[in-house]
Image 1 (tube, rainbow over the protein chains, first blue to last red):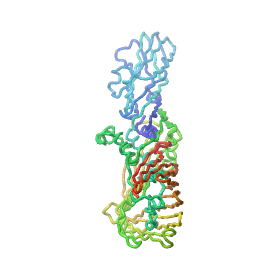
Image 2 (cartoon, rainbow over the protein chains, first blue to last red):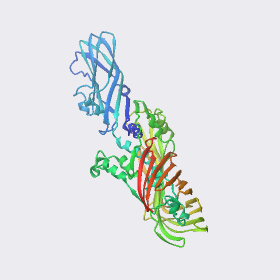
Image 3 (cartoon, rainbow over the protein chains, first blue to last red):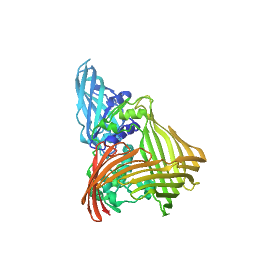
Image 4 (cartoon, rainbow over the protein chains, first blue to last red):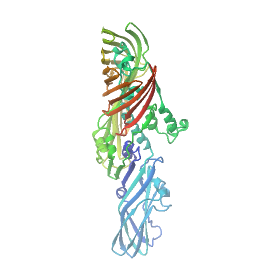
Length: 177
Length: 446
C-alpha cells in the first residue's frame, strides 16, 4: 500500500466520513505478501540452531490517518496450508504486527493458527479473527505497519506453511470532523 | 493523510457553500428571510444591482419597508454555548492537534448569526475501500452523489465601498471592486473512480482541472438615476453608471493536476507519479495599474400596485493589465517553474451581473419575485407578505445557484414605529442533501 494512493482513497472519506459513517478498509494483505514472496515459510522440528522460523519483516504502508481516528474493529480472515513433508505433529502459524520494525517479533502475536500434520498430507487451516486485541488496533492508523510471520513445529516434522489468503477488514470510526 | 482529507473537505465545503453564502447568508433582515430572500423596494440586492432604484422612493407605506433593520444574532449565543472557551478551543487553535480548519471555514462561510433550529444532517453511510497489491476500489455509498460531476467552485463580484456625493440625480464617487473566481472540475477517470466506484486502472492519469483568479481595485464612477416619466405613483425610472476601473492587482492560475498510476496499483516505492501543470499570471500591487471602462444600466417601472425593474452591472468591464508576469509550472517526478514572459499585457473580464424583479402590492398583501445572476448561475426568489393588523405572515421559495429549492417562512409584529420580525429559512450544506432550518430575528424601525 502506498501513502499517495491512500491519500486519494481517503480524501473521498471527507465527503462522507464527516458524520457517524464508518470508513471500512478491506485490505488483501495476502496480495502484498505474495508479491514479496513472503507468503511461504518452511518449518522443521525440532528447530536446528541458526535456522530461522520467521520471515524477514515485511513493510506495509497502512492508513496513516493518525490518532484522531478510532479503530472500531480489525477483523482478520484467511487460510494457511501446511504442506507436510515428513513426520507427525502440529504446526503453529503466528502473525505479528508492530509499528517498530525491530519490535515485531518481541511481542505477542496478533493471532495464531495451529494444525495437526501427518506425512505427505496438506492440512488447510482456515482462520477468522473477529477482532484483534484493543492494544493492537491503533497500529493500523499509522502510515507504516510491519508484519512478521512465524511457523513453529511440535514433533519431528518438516514441511512448508503456505499462506493462501489473508484479508484485514479495518473499521474506523472517523473523528476527523 | 488527515491533511489531505481536511483539504478535500475544505474544497467540498467551500465549493458547496459558496452558493448559499452568496444567496442567503449575508441577509440580516428576518423579514426578507421570511419571504425566501426576496428583495423588495430599495432593499436587498435591488439598489446594488439596479442603478435606477437609487431614484425610486422607498415607499415604506407600500412594502412595509423599514428605515432601519437591526439583526438580533441569537445564533451567536448558540455558538458561544457550543464553544464556551473559544480562545482555548482546540478546534479553533491552529497550533492544536485538534485544530479543525473545516469547522473554522464553515463558521466563516456560515456566520453564526442565526439560530440553528434544525441542523442539516450529514451523511452517515459507510465508505468502503477495497485494497490489494494490484487493486483499489472505493465505494462511497450514498455519499457518492456528493462528488460533483460538473464544474464547481466559488465566484463573487463585490463592491465593498462606494463613497461619493450626489446632486439632482447625479452621483460622483469611487467604488472599490473585487472579483474572485475559483473553479474545479474532476476529470473523467477521477470522477468514475470516486462517483461510480470504478476500480483504479493501470497507467492511467487521474486529475482535476483547477482555475483560480482574484483581482481588485477601485473605480471612479459617475452615475445618474431619475424618474424620467410619470409621478411617484406611476413612474418610469432609469439609471446608469460609468466606471473607470483601476486595477491594483490580480493573480490567475489555470492548470490541471493529478497523478498517474503505474503498472501495478501499489507497486514499488512510488506507485503513483504526481503530474501537474499550471500557467500562472499576475500583476502585483505596485506594478503599473490595470485599467478598463464599464458600466451599469437599470430601469424600473412603478405603476400603482406593480413594480418592475431590470438592472445590469459591469457591462463591458474588461480590465487591461499592462505589466503582467507569466510563469509556467510543471511537475512530473520533479518540479520546475519557467518564466514565460514578463511585463506583458493581459486582460481580464468582470462577470456581467443582472437582476430582474417584479412586485405586486394590493392592500395589505405584497407578492414579488426576483432573479439575480452574478456570473455563476441564477438565484431566484419568489415570496410574499400578508399584513393583518399588527401582525404579518410571510412565505417564500428560493432556488439557489446549485438549483436547490429552499423555503422561507415567518412573521412579524409591529408596534407603531417598531417591529419585531422572525424568519425561518431552510438550507442545505455542501455535505448533505437534507435540509436544515435556521431562524433569523431582527428589529425594524419604521
